[in-house]
Amino acid sequence: MVLTAALALAAAYLVGAVPIGYLVARIYGFGDIRRHGSGNIGATNVLRTAGKLPAILTLAGDIVKGYCAVALAGAISGHRHVVATAAVLAVAGNCWSVFLGFRGGKGGATGLGVMLRLVPWATLPAAVVWLAIALTFRLASLATISAALVIPLGVLLFTLAGHAFGYGWPEFFATLVGTLVVVGRHHENIARLRAGTESRIGQRAATT
Image (cartoon, rainbow, N blue to C red; front, side):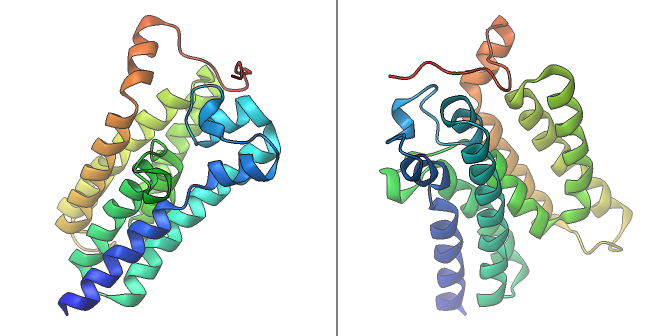
């Protein structure tokens, strides 16, 4: 039991730690994406630095790896608490990747993939929030933070309402911790949002 749980958690972290944006930028000839724009490996910086197709590949790859990380953990260990913990570790893997010296992204897209697997019904409203804010204000960070905050609230409401969707306290605490990680990783964006200097979606970044 303990060995199976440890294997599931390690697998979730390692899958989450795969640096998709870094790899995509390398494939497209932009070298180390961390030396460009904001220095982040996420889809937003890839878009500003490398263009739409690399950004789409990065976004899709991060979502898929988050989903697969939780699915793999569930296949290894079906224990509810293990899968919930694996969800958090997959997001942590993206943010602090062992493959990049424990540096990484901000967890937004990977978190989306994780939550689509763990709590899909609570994730759908968050996706609507993300699209609405992104299309209205063209601020990816604001959209991501807002959407992330919606998910644990949705899980809490589903949990209090009963077990129709199969959600409970393990899923709530997993989504809450995941949200805190994602929001915390956006602390610089929050400062720029407050100052009115945050870059908008599609805005090209200066390279170094």
